[in-house]
Amino acid sequence: MKNSLFSKMVVTYTIIITVSFTILAAFLSFWFQDYFIKTRQRDLTRQADIIEGIATKYLTGASSYEELTTSIKFISTYINDDIVLVDSNGYVYSVTNIKYTPLIGKQIFHDDLENINNSDYIDAFNEYGVYMDEKIYVMMKVVKDTKGQSMGATLFSVSTDILDKSLSNVYQIIWLSAVFAVIASCIVIYYFSQKMIVNPLSEMSGVARKIAQGDVDKRVEIHSDDEMEEFANAFNVMADSLQKVEQNRKEFISNVSHELRSPMTSIKGFIGGILDGVVPDEKHKYYLNIAYEEIQRLTRLINDLLDLSAVESGTYKLEKVPVDINEIVRICILRNENRIRNKNLDVQVFFEGSELWVLTDGDKITQVVTNLLDNAIKYGKEDGLIQISCRKKGKKANISIFNEGSNIDEEDIKHIWERFYKVDKSRTQKVSTGLGLSIVKKIVSLHDEEIWACNKENGVEFIFTLQLAKKSM
Image (cartoon, rainbow, N blue to C red; front, side, top):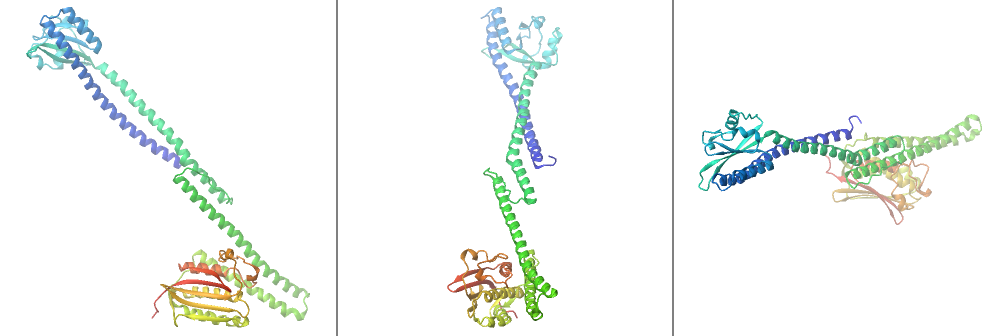
């Protein structure tokens, strides 16, 4: 998967682990080299102490030459190094390797034994025909008696090849372990990354493509008890929302199609009947009036659809200024005076003072009051009561519109703000577009205010809030 999250993650983790194990392996290699050499030196020092006792016994006559050679050869075999013994005058008197036999009885050192270095040993050996290469290191331990007087020295001929070979074996173990650890870590990372991240993301990606193709019922099933499960749950919540949006879209198209088809069918039928001569001349005006009413209904529906579209698209901008809500209520009542008289409605208005200033968009809130009052007039019973009140409550103004009439089922109250939602037939009239309350809800929400409906004993009341403001100058 080129440039995939999985490949990037595996490469990143592999680099981090490789660098980490490389540093660790290098540290262990240097540490073990120092540890090995110091351990080797301590081991030779202990053997030198043993040889010191054996050499002292021989030099003082307490043991034979055979006992001396047998002991140091055993020690030489144990430590895998050659041993050369010299007396206090620098004469060689015992060796463990036959190649050093020419040195026996020869004075290889003429200076103080404690002042001789490694190059002096090699030069002395070479002088008597025992040639030493550069891979030999000679370690000397001075032999002293009980009084601290020098009685000679013990020389250990240590081959650096053996040291290098031992260290090389250790280095191989360390670096092979590091390589194995890197490979094992990469396999573990690959497996768990694939299982915990890549597979869930791939599943969500596949479901997302199916949802994009219209299969909105698809969901992601991930149970990992971690952030990936939370992400999957959030994805499913989004899918639920998309499904609801898709369902609302289908219902909206269906409702709009139905609302447009009915008046268009009526208009077509009436005008077609008139043009075909089926309708008598004396009935022309009657049917033309019906067609005109249907055209008005279509106009209201289209205007409401345009308003709703503007609100939902975000182009419905608010210009909040101090406005007298009492005056808006008065204007809306006057505009509907003829309808109120036709139904013989008793409209009662309660104002808390002659003015009540609120911070709002005057045109938009006028539409809210108009729609709510229109709703109250349409669904209010003949000769019934409409009550409108504007009161202060804390830092808010509460505007309520009540109409006498049938109650709304509690289950329906939850859905009255939805587009084209139909309640029982007693509250459904042909003059309603089914969009008025949806527009009201969205305008009030744009103001960051609240609106709700509740059933009263003999009717229904709608209440919304607005922020109080000081009177404009």
